[in-house]
Image 1 (tube, one colour):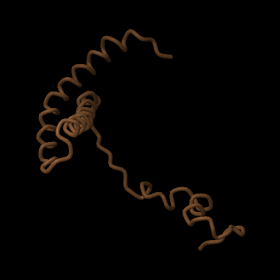
Image 2 (image 1 turned 135 degrees about the vertical axis):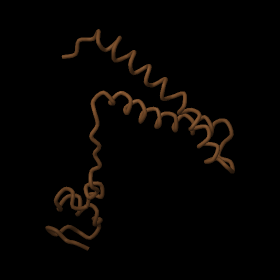
Image 3 (image 1 turned 45 degrees about the vertical axis):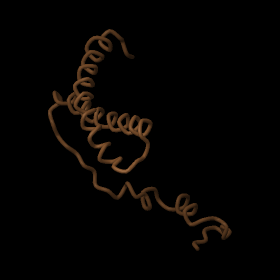
Image 4 (image 1 turned 180 degrees about the vertical axis):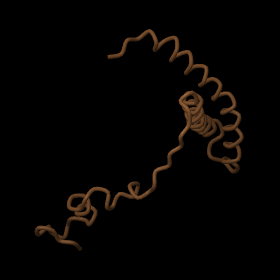
Length: 112
């Protein structure tokens, strides 16, 4: 047990680490190297909608599968099948919706 300024033994080590050590020393995420990709700005909408469609189609496919059949044997194989099918429809839909919103709705709003 580490004792700092007569801290009694009922405080956990994590409490002492959080309050008496420099930030980032025990932060697990701070030790990972950052991963960066450089690409042209014209691909922003394509990449953004692709990542958004991946995450949303996984969440919706999982929820619908759990509601429809529950957690059964072969759940993950069925999830991968339904996720792939959902993504085929989600990405073009997200791309078209993002275009319509950015070009025809947000262009009419004045932000300050």
